[in-house]
Image (cartoon, rainbow, N blue to C red):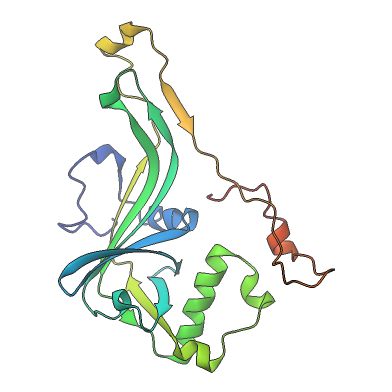
Length: 217
């Protein structure tokens, strides 16, 4: 079972809840942006950021000066993938199809040099597979200016919605209105070169071949 704790127990829309541990990495693989929820000086702050992950941890990074990465307190990390709109016969029954994960934990600041590079590689490869080996690695000075946090995946909640409207067998069906789903299909565009790039330098295959491909799996 996927971490059945009081905070991750599905209380509303239980049919959308998932308990298979395999569902969590599938949501993380499909998403690109996580939202880090944390208290800073007693006030809530939610920070959007890219992430990387393995089977035990999710990694978030930022500047050493970032206040959201230095509290040392428990955090909540969410990842959401929008898959489409649910368009019903009544406004009340409208909704969205989505895949989402919510992760609770106390972040660990990564100080070990090998683990730091490991986490940064996972983060880079998650958003741009092949980019870590193509580009220059971080220098010691750059690593010193970077904070990398790891949050355990031990306590997490996953919900997935992929169904049609709920009012097809109710009184509103007699209205004769169209209802259904409007899928969201986002794809990568054509690479745009840096204006300062010298002529003749083409994007590498791991970048150029992403054009037209779906952003989320």
